[in-house]
Length: 245
Image (cartoon, rainbow, N blue to C red):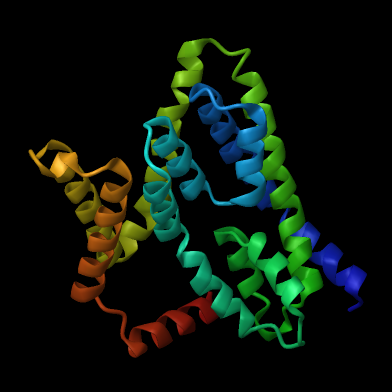
C-alpha cells in the first residue's frame, strides 16, 4: 500500500471518531464561553492540548482562580496516560521515523486514535496514523469554534447547563469499564470520596483546588492498583479475548 493509500485508509477509518469529537468539543466551546474566556484562547487550548478531560479540568481550574503550578500538575497527572500510549505505539511502528515525525504523532494522540492505531499492530505507519488523526483533530477544532459562537446565541441558562453536560460525559465514560473491572470501579469511587472529603472536612478544604484533583487522582489510582493488580496471566487472557472478538 502506497503512502497516499495508507493515509486515505486511516482517514476513512476515523470518520466516526471525528463526528463524536464534534459533539464533545462543542460542549467545551460552550464551557469556555460560559467561563468568559476569549474565543482565541479556547481555540488555542483545543489546538495544542487535544484531550477532553485535561481541557475541561484546565478551564475549570482557571475559572476558579487556580495557580499555574496547580494547573500544570493537575493537567500533567490527567494526561500522563498519553505517555504510556506513546511508548506502546512506538513499539509497533516497524519502519524508522525521525524525531520531528514522532513529535507530530504525539501531538495528535488521543484515546480513540490510539485504539484505532493499535488495531494495525506492527503494520502501523506514520501515513496511516496521520490519516487517523486528521479528521478527529479538525472535528475537535470545528466543534470548539461552533460551540463558542453558539454560546452567544443560546440563552444563558442553556450555556450554563454545559457544565452539567461535562459531568454526564464523564459518567458515560466511567460506567462501562466500572462494570467490567472492580479496580476501575474502586478507583472512581475512591477518587470521588477523597475529593468530597477534601471539600467538606475542615483544614483539608484549605488545600488549593488543583492539588485536591492531583491528590484524589493519584491516591485513588495507587489504592486500586494495590488491591487489584493486573497480573501477566490476566493480560494474556485479555489479549486472547480481544483476538477472539
